[in-house]
Length: 205
Ligand code: GAR
Image 1 (cartoon, rainbow, N blue to C red):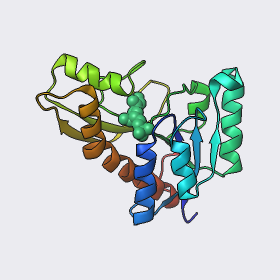
Image 2 (cartoon, helix red, strand yellow):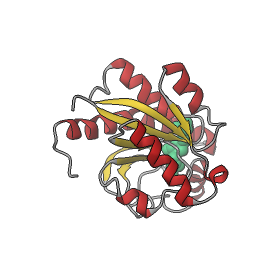
Image 3 (cartoon, helix red, strand yellow):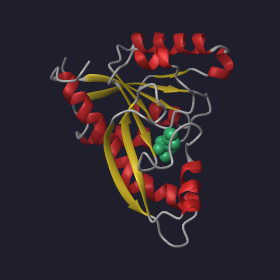
């Protein structure tokens, strides 16, 4: 295998997807190729980014499809149609069952906007994470990329980076700083690390 095929799962703006696309264009993401963008809603701006970059996209909406089984069957179909080796969860807000994640051991990365184990787990996503960090009064927060297993935000940590909380921060301002200083740097690096291992046959699967 020359490159690992990556599927990026998104639900919203897709700035982390953009960071991956930019890294691919710059050649820093070289062991993997973004082969599919999968959105959980047709409104996700990530779909526009995929279109602009010429990357195939699919929409699998849990709400529109109905059951979790049918939702995951649709995802599996899209993944096999594009011969995907690695899944990157980049702000994907739909829940994936244990049955699903068990089929991809060591092959799913997730980006979370805090220093795990702080401010993570069930119900902690997006702005809520930064609201919780500000409410607790931490002076340092950051982002984590980890491998996904059956425990929400509980899989092995791949990369982490710390970011300062500054006086006057709102959740929105802090979110932006964490994205700029940590998420957009870490996610392409982690994707390259995992894809390089897979290409060399050194991953643990
Ligand atoms: C990012 O901040 C990501 O870390 C977070 O959602 C945002 C998606 O933004 N993910 C989580 O909170 C997962 N628990 P994006 O669509 O612009 O990449």
